Length: 169
Image (tube, rainbow, N blue to C red; front, side, top):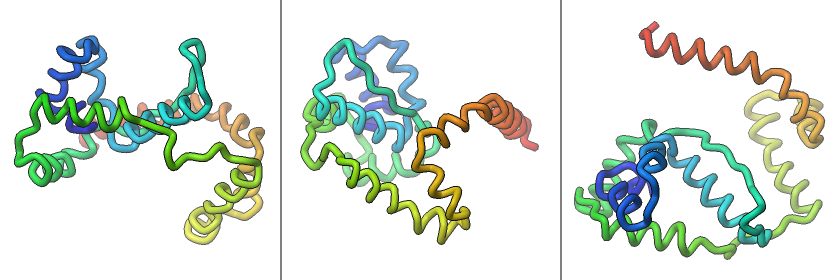
């Protein structure tokens, strides 16, 4: 999907054959590998939950395509002999978007969710040194709701970082 979103042939296929508006096609460069995976997971989850056209499921675009030019070049060479065509884009859309299914998915029980949460223990407590009580606090939605008060501060920090990077400092 990255090649479909970030090559001339892929964008041409989306606009001309799929009827995707040019303004939307132009925004697809903001979707990196993790963002694309998140969108695909949201599509599959919406199918699993039988969501209808008047229901919404929200996900996050966590990265942009600008992070992956070398990976894109390797994939383009390895899989497509350095030529990604509109036909290749059609195959990618058919395989990864149109045929997205709920295979290999489960609707988690409370026990499943706790088990998944516990997988983070090694990363956060053992590797990152997060205090155990802080790790455990993350089980509660109140912890996550409490973070909302920091969004303005974080936005300012992101703006500051972006300005410094743009200036080269």
